[in-house]
Image 1 (cartoon, rainbow, N blue to C red):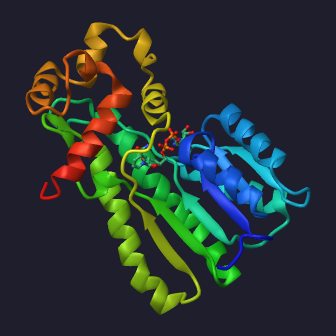
Image 2 (image 1 turned 120 degrees about the vertical axis):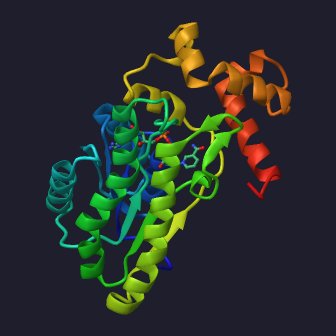
Length: 268
Ligand SMILES: NC(=O)c1ccc[n+]([C@@H]2O[C@H](COP(=O)([O-])OP(=O)(O)OC[C@H]3O[C@@H](n4cnc5c(N)ncnc54)[C@H](O)[C@@H]3O)[C@@H](O)[C@H]2O)c1
């Protein structure tokens, strides 16, 4: 694909972070975009920002959709085809995701399944809904967002990340398996998998919100300790992932510290 001009892209989780940036940058390059998010206001705002930086013939639509609910994904698909007056799409970015479900042993089953449903079922339902529309276009691209946690199945010492890592490994495996399937059965269409390391988005705040938890600043000591158990915090300090005890509660710093530690220990 030499140019995005005149194409139609689908972006899930378009209301924040990397998804919002995709919506804005695609529109700026002449690509029409249908973006969804379960936060309708956030995706409306992202669409407005994208329209402000795009040529008048670029159409950017915003849709409320929870990608873990197949009926909503199908409604999103129908809405966007009608809204854009198209019968196929050219690019699909399955980007929506949340963190959570850290411990399979001690965590709540509900949170585990919710995280897995958003991160894995969301990608699966979107592939079911949109792959036929990419094939109909002839030369489309399906882009799945996995994570460094699709390579490395923990957040750090004493910090299991089971639901998220299981989903992100599944996304990587599904994408790799699709390569041969597409080569064999739909050779014009390609699949790509993105494995980001730490990116400074609002994913922690958005994931807490998705789990019905307050913002970090409003959390009690008990809620904070639940997010990073004291013994895990102590191990991070011991292993110098965290420089000071206070820094173990600085989440932005925590995640960049963990990403750096991960990069330094490739054998894990
Ligand atoms: N930020 C990182 O460091 C990082 C690293 C590796 C992978 N990732 C992955 O990148 C993707 C984008 O993350 P981000 O950092 O931009 O996060 P973000 O929280 O800034 O953006 C994600 C968006 O997805 C939306 N979303 C969440 N669940 C949804 C659902 N069920 N249906 C529809 N929309 C939903 C959120 O409301 C949010 O607007 C995610 O899949 C994430 O797992 C992020």
